[in-house]
Length: 67
Ligand code: SF4
Ligand code: SF4
Image 1 (spheres, rainbow, N blue to C red):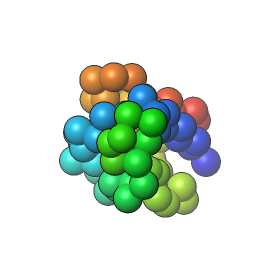
Image 2 (image 1 turned 45 degrees about the vertical axis):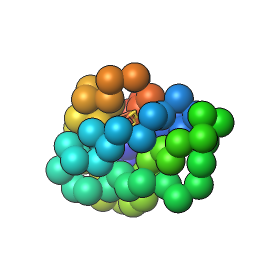
Image 3 (image 1 turned 90 degrees about the vertical axis):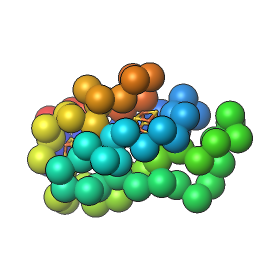
């Protein structure tokens, strides 16, 4: 099962990864990070394809995908 790690304190909440995930597994986190922004969170580990589109599209390299 693929493993996704999101660096929530590095995330600026641009939501690009949310729109690019084909399975819609990433969503906005209501909590704030150290920057005072709403980061994103990974919701459903079982549905992840491990395609790494989220990691590739992130402009700030906040996401790591391990297969
Ligand atoms: S690896 Fe692919 S399926 Fe998994 S969260 Fe990222 S974009 Fe979505
Ligand atoms: S693309 Fe990167 S910076 Fe933008 S919301 Fe996703 S993880 Fe955060």
